[in-house]
Length: 398
Image 1 (tube, rainbow, N blue to C red):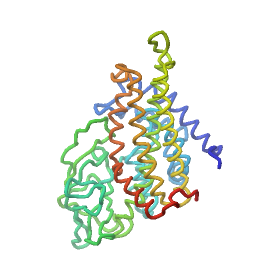
Image 2: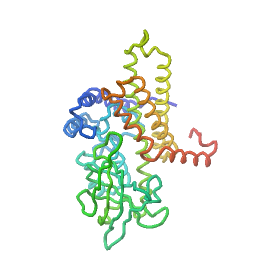
Image 3: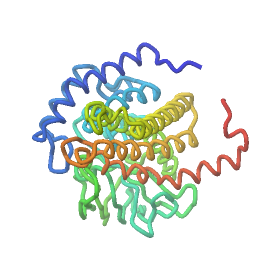
Image 4: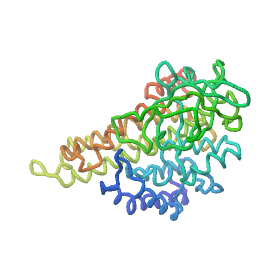
């Protein structure tokens, strides 16, 4: 069992790490480069994106024939971790959510015409996109069978009515994937549609204020009151919406884990540097046994999360849906990110709680990790069902 990255993937990892160190971290360090929502501002972002493209590190997970780099999930696990050493890293490489997950599913199941119309502009960095699925009560969230947004057939098109909320990136998105109900069939009742921001029949009701820093475009509430979509903009077939979500969300959950691992490591990096310098009671904090326990525990949990993430990535590359592997990684890494940054703030004291470091940014961001793309409790239900079904085979090496 070899955990060494192949030479080509290791080369990508090293190049991504070097780019973050020399190009992105200096930009992150200057508050003048931040926008009002605590993300990187558009002007410095465009400069960095041009440099990423020139360095051959753009859109690592997309096929080379579509101007990506064609890396497998195992390679993405190593590289995305390095990208998110900076809080601004993934978006610079065109590897941030929700664009990353949408590009992957469009490439996997879109027709050639749909790829040209909807996918390629996202890959090129000309537009951003969003995935409109989550609804307010009593609509669908973790349980898509509760979805209330409807698409009704009228003549040669579908007419959408309903409401979505907490749609990440919607405020800046040009292209959207929309999940809507087309029948009451429990398995084939949902359909995925593609639409453009400029089409009439829908609106952004509000950009919902949140606790943490925001992705570009925020988290929005959307109202649909007559949006019309033609058959050529149905993704897969009518009734295949649940299949589209499964194809999209499994890898998307795992890429979250890859990025969050980078943030967890950055948190310990900041804390480790501080405790090696800060003196208290005649010695550095790093020499205190209590501090060593905190750092050692957090470092161990990060490594557990990395291994679970890499195992799930390998399973996906091998053709598996990797449902239990992804769920285990999602729960572990979400908990670990919060634990790592909480530990780092505790060790850095008031400095960690201040805005002199990015720890407080990561801390506010980290709380969402246990909620997005399925709450931790939902993933534990998935794991319980797998165990009860498989028994001792749950731990198979296969």
